Image (tube, rainbow, N blue to C red; front, side, top):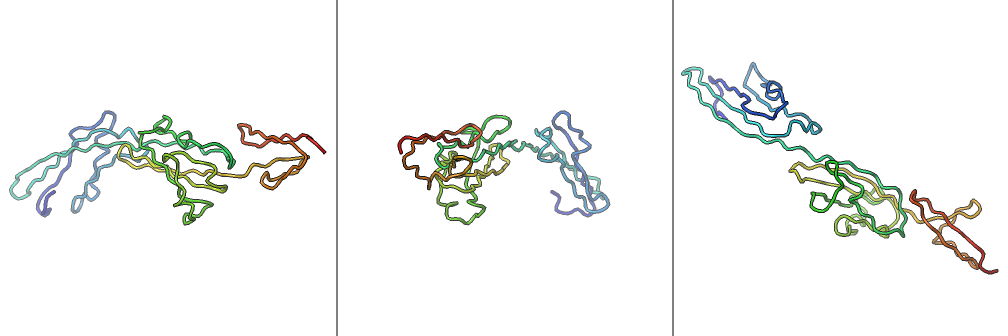
Length: 217
């Protein structure tokens, strides 16, 4: 970088770049009538076609003597991870452990160990300062246990495997299972069916269906 810009001419040129990229579109002097201000334009985070290796040359010419000095620099552009989140359906507090990998795809593939995936709890019932946020720990860093408590949990997902950090979040909604008898709803924590034998099962759509039968009077 020239220490003095008065009386010199500074010029950047593209010497090498990935295929399919227009060399005239990636370097620009944003102040052509004053002190040069060159910028490298390599697209927005969604334009992965700009990834690859670039070589630029800087030439500095003394306007008084005509002496010219050039040097070059190599720049590598790496893409951000592409993250797709599938929000889980509401779950019941008595369900089995949830594998959080199941709800994330990284660059089109299911999230897994070793791909840079990091999960953390950031909110409980829309409160980032709730004590449960810091006291509740995900099992193995990527498994959520419904018995952590009913309510609304925010899970933050992060991935910096390529060197570029990408983050997203999703909610897990927890509830107690409920059953209906003749159109009425009963909280299974409070309902005590004296003289009744009952069973319940859960369907994939996560609706609770209860079956009640008379055992004795």
